[in-house]
Image (cartoon, rainbow, N blue to C red; front, side, top):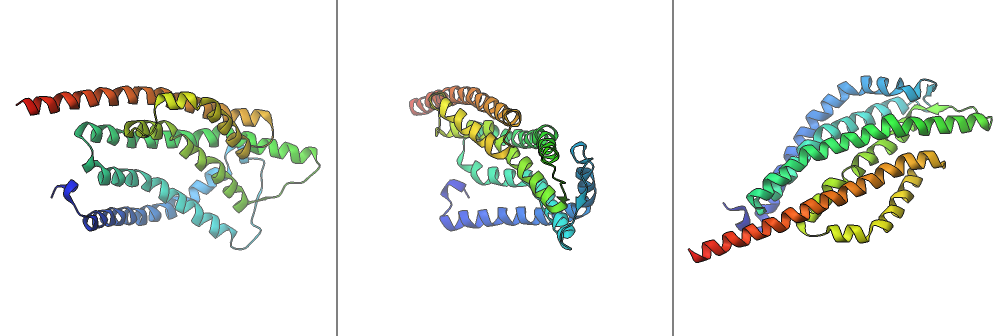
Length: 254
C-alpha cells in the first residue's frame, strides 16, 4: 500500500508499531544499563574533577536511586539511534528519494553532535564549575559535604542539556529544508540569538565570567555554524526545486 494513501487509522497503527519497536529495544537497553551502571558510576566518581570530593549518602535510598537514574540514562542513550531511525522511517514515505537519503544522513550526524556536546560539558565545563564552587566554599570557610545523589543530578543537569544544544546545526538544517527558516532570518536574528545564548550560558554556569564564556562562546559558534549550514541547505533546496520543476516539465511534454 502506498503510504501516501494510508488512512489516519493506518498511520496511527504504523506509529504504534514503531513505538513498540522502540519500547522493546529500550527494555533490552535497560538490561545493559543495569549491568553498566556500577562501572559508570565508579568512573564518574573517580573522574579528575571528583578526586578531592567525598561522596556521601544522606538517605538509605540514595545509592539505589543513583543506580537506577544512571541505568535509565544509559538505556536512553543506547535507544537514541533507534528512536531517530524509527522517526525517520515514519516520515520518510512522504519525502522524495533525495530527501530520504539526506534526512537519513542526519542520524549519525545527530548522534555525533550529541556525544560531542556531552563530552564538552563533562570534560571541559563541569570540572571548572566544580572547582569554582569548591574554591568559593573554601574562601567562605564552609566545609562542603557532597551527597552522591545531588552530585549526579548536578552532573546530568549540566551534561545532558549540552548534548541537545549541540543538535542546533542538524535542527537548523532540517528546518531550512522544510522552509520554516532561512539564512536571511538567522542573519536578522543574530543579535537576539546572541543575547539568548549568553543568557542561557549564564543560567547554567556559576556567576563568574570565565565559566560563562566557556559555555557561551561554544553556543555562539554553534549558531554561526548553523547559519552556514542553513545557507548551504537553502541553496541545495532551491537547486532541488529547479530540478524537480525541469523533470515535471519534461514529463508533461512527453
